[in-house]
Image 1: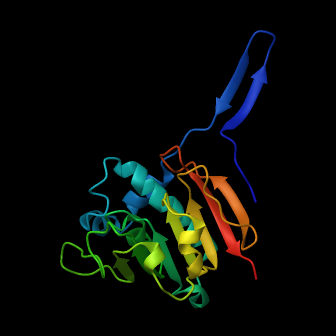
Image 2: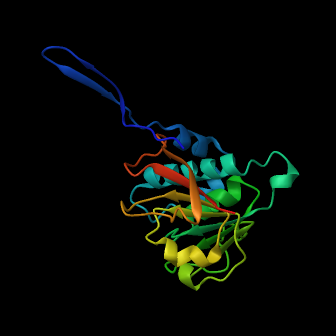
Length: 209
């Protein structure tokens, strides 16, 4: 488990103390804008409702990167895994990015979603491997997903414990967010400085056997 501090280094003299702090970078924004699927994702309107699209895009891409690290898909043995995204908002921002940037099946769950069943592209096509569900996660019954992702979701462990995901990736927005250590082991925690938001911490948990 690793944790990164916002302070890079500090120096002190008799009269002054100098502190160097980290600042966010734009690597995720660049990766998104340079991708072949950028036009489709933006055309689908999933980032249109937000007042801070750069913030939302970098949050989504940071979680995409976390999924890619846990489920690399260079071999067929790790393809076609199942991912549930909790609290994606009125549009499946993270769900759409995961569907385009990975070969896995994605279910985006939020009672505020504008569409249920799937999400349309401007030309009428449905985004492949993305299914949208207009319900609370408490009301979802499913086989245990390979990964459950929480992008600033306002839920507690009790809300999704019945799903028993193998892995949990959380970008918490609440200070009191926690996963019971009796059921899950935190395997990593870090601040992702490609996220253009102060709430950039990502925590990864693995279900205990």
